[in-house]
Length: 396
Image (cartoon, rainbow, N blue to C red; front, side, top):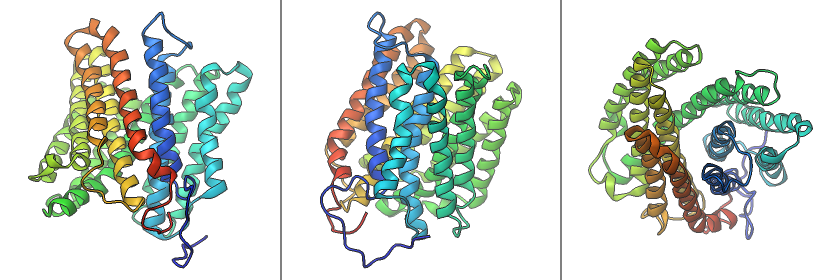
């Protein structure tokens, strides 16, 4: 186990593999642009360039984009929490290659290559869980929750790949459901720890003391039960748990709110991610109670396009600024339009089909376009920061 040496000289020049957030945030944003462009073309027939399916789209947004953001955040945060060195340089580049291989080859891979891609994809999730478990072993507050959720993510990915390999037809739905639950679970834990702290630190309001720890523990129990109810198909229980968790989330967001929040995009983007979580939970409750397939689809995209989308782009911007030695506030030019485009894409994708089911034919490709442009803007602002050494001369 390597402990960080404060006497080590700061890196200079090209810095992509100095710390986990750099390559994985860059890869996540690049993949968001490329995957959304391909998906938009696939939806806008007859301009499809590849035979992409909804199974591919759901998998890549979860196990491609979202997992890359989670990997970048946790590989960076775990080092800060413990002082233990996480992979960098060649080992970090190898992890990135393991993540990238299934992304790049899956759309046109021949059947005999699929087992290798499955091994690489699930192997990356397992490797990330092992690295985090090793790094956090002496950190009681974090050593169980993150590795456990990453193992659940690996299990979900395995289920999806078993369906791709023709070994378990139900694996697609099971894998996406478990994967969605694991990704949102990781982001909820991250958000609860950082969002109120960021608001408090910037606005000088005692936000963290407003919500007792037992409220978060109650939310964790409700979320775990909700995930189980969804996996095992108990609609009435899923509806009730979603409603209860949504009401708790409303109360927490109200306690987190502070005057001045809307002046800082890096604050409201995380707070609005919570609002989308509430909206998604409300749609889950209504959809399951009414057995309405349209509401179920809207709920999924509210949670993922809205909640996960805003949370991840906000986290990437905040972490990149802080860990490259730059001032976090005010947000750099281009950040606000990127956030607004992600938000607009979520609104369009969720609300248009609810108001008019026929609108999905044009709303989904347009929402994909908005997401793609959002991450082009993100890359224009943040890619140079991710590629270059810290401006304050410190390692990282």
